[in-house]
Image (cartoon, rainbow, N blue to C red; front, side):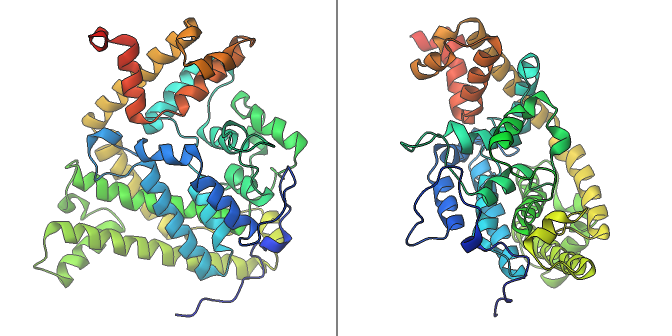
Length: 390
């Protein structure tokens, strides 16, 4: 199948706005492909292999982690971008980066860090992702962070839309400070490629949470029959293949649901681009709504699916029990490190020195947010359990 021609509103790597710190161009890669490679080689990206998606990483090796989720999002984003005639490297890059700031234990970890950081400026995983790629990764002699292109940074921080209304939040102060030095156009929409990455995230987690939920035994395929979108697909798969085993039914149903969601995004985006006469990348940014989107019918179906997953998976007592344990682990470590910073590893203790209380809290938060699930569990055990002394 031949790919469509380049869309007039695609980002052109040859016209990139460049990097905050000027560097010679790569001889072999576009600026966006170079960004992708920097993200893949980062420490934060490697740590995603043992960070929770829904299930804590040690609960089983068949469930998604942040790393496998990010790879799946990137694959969907690249395919969508190619089908739309957009820059697939940029869409893939933003997709790979979108979860770098997530702390251990998924949303439970984020919620607990927000509670602990409330007196000190708060915590937001999107802002943390931005801080990872602009400050916390330390790999180069001339700058902190990864020195990514303007287009990638824009996509990382506003792939879900304009963010100016968030800048007054204490947790977004890092973005306001960076933007004052290097204008990211925070009042507009991001590129079509960034919007593709955002929709690819929705497609990936809706489908793969269904897959993981069934694998974990939290619900079965029969319970999905009355759920919009996935229910009719399960029925049709069984009608097409009446003798196949349930595992293959599940996988085929998820595969078809991904296809249905991708087709819906392609059709709705084409409709919006035609209706708004979008002719350039700047036209995309200056719209008063997203260009890349699901149709209204798909959004309604996804809302019903999310309600099912919320009641049967995200708030299942087994998941709640893990969330409770995770929050206690992070709360106890945070409070100990604040009270006794000299028990931090040497590098982090040094960073915490000569700072006010809020500055020290941010260092503690950065240390904890960078942990994998497994490391957080082990670090908590070393700090609070006497049996490790034996």
